[in-house]
Image (cartoon, rainbow, N blue to C red; front, top):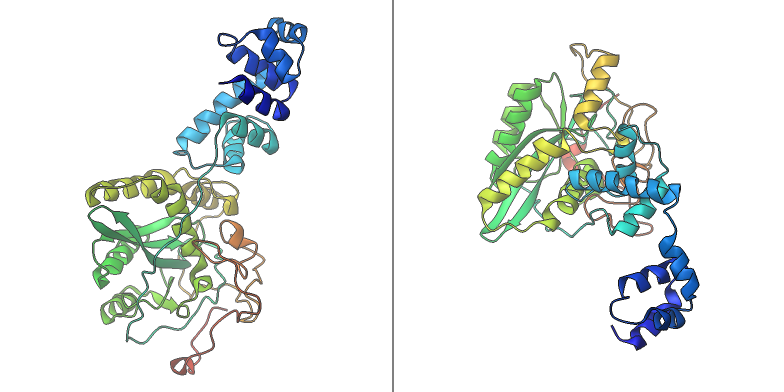
Length: 372
């Protein structure tokens, strides 16, 4: 580093930062020269060198180690809010702004998001009615499932992932991966969810992709007693909860990894869903608990009875998609607080004056038995 560069950066350094700079470069330049250029006194520098760290500085050093452990355990995806929740779970009482400051000093940051490609292809099949109408609150597990398909880019082509997510706990109860967008992809995900959860009268909400409107999928839903529900075409708000999971998957895993083989992508996605997302990842919408811990806490408080009647949850007005229920978990991330403003994966703002929802289609004139 040249003396001219030292003079340039001297305008933005505090005295303590200047002392640290002098200590780091004392083998390259005279201490007195650097102190003069940085605007600090040599006596102040020598006093700083001999001074013992304050209790606050020692506490910050120990806390930074805990922050590094929590950030590393999340595969480098946690930001300050979730790191703060992780420390609180360990019994470490500290402010969130202090965590953010120490993370910034350590060069740590959470994951960011990337754009996506469309995987929804409207089929010719008759779509099911919309039984959810953007109200994704559920008062118990296995009342409402949301499903969708996303893609995983690899050097050998796209690998497609279909998931089934429980709206109560955000838990992925069924998933499947394949190299084509065939109906069997969503059937495998549904069958996995049915085998692991064994629901009674659950609502399965999805978009109007050809996989979900196919005859095979509709037949499987009737056999299992699943009530299909579908949002409107090309509207991410109608399936915002599943879009929120895909945004998490993409910003915390896919945009940080590159896969040469599809087999490697399968293994990594499996580890993310079953080894991290369901069991360990903290969700802000459920009190910074993991989906497994949230369901366990629910069962301890109130054992789940056998549901013999249709599930029920309040349904907001079609003109007011932001109206939230009084009970139940809300959407994850910011779309929980303002679902009428943000979409799912890339959180793009809805245009001003945009119609909140598509109108009723001709085949929807027969009013279905909706959630009450």
